[in-house]
Image (tube, rainbow, N blue to C red):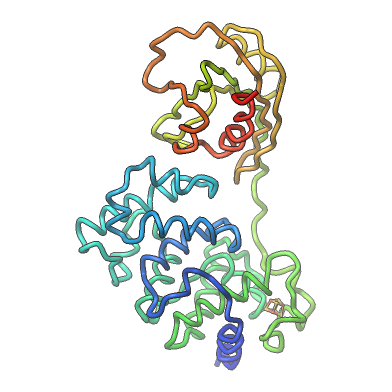
Length: 349
Ligand code: SF4
């Protein structure tokens, strides 16, 4: 029989934390706010999410308002959070909710899970926190906590390890699953963190097997990630009458439909520079700006060059000139937003 005394201890600890999180402000909890916050919090730190969440709610206060927005508005509001497919999925799911579910987040697990971008973790979080249902919400934090707490030595990224964790979760899930899931989130974000867990501050340390056996840094076991691919990017700053030439990325693939400075990617910086000069048939000055951007699977080492090619019009619908004032309002592809912010001074000079 599993000892579940720690469950109440953990929930009491979480209740007295009183974390100031904008998505936890309203009571009863709004499923729309829970959903958006959970998607934003995937891969992004809580503190970084807060301003995005507040701006998002001002712009799109309801599912209906979000469904009515254009893709460009949604991507622009998401700009800086990365993983733009999440924003596209949110938008698509909002449109489905608006047309089929009366502009509400549905309250049935199977239905919620079938919506774009909502996996079992997010669905479990929404149903337990906003609708009071007894559902679990298992993400990387929860896998890590349970692997340590119960000393699970199987790889948590493989089916067997995950199954062991799921069994423990099922046996320990209380009626008030929403508060419990949030308490696990708090513990995973504040105390039982990935590399150096703060066991001396942990409210459930006396129940933790990994801590007892000195294995808290060894667990959880997880398969090593593949190494990230490093690429070199050369971007052209082509300025004409106070506006920069920009290119819209294809509708599918990485950073889809977002705007960027004309660029090439290559395996060496020399190759990238050469190819950029060749493509625009002009001499490049610089690099005038450098940046290293780390995505989940690749790294871009970026160099930007001032270029003055003889641009022929029309250039096709994927190219357009934007002044800094204009490009502040279009979705810019990840690191190109940084370059855009820097490049504004070239217009003022
Ligand atoms: S005692 Fe340490 S390893 Fe165990 S749950 Fe608490 S923080 Fe995590």
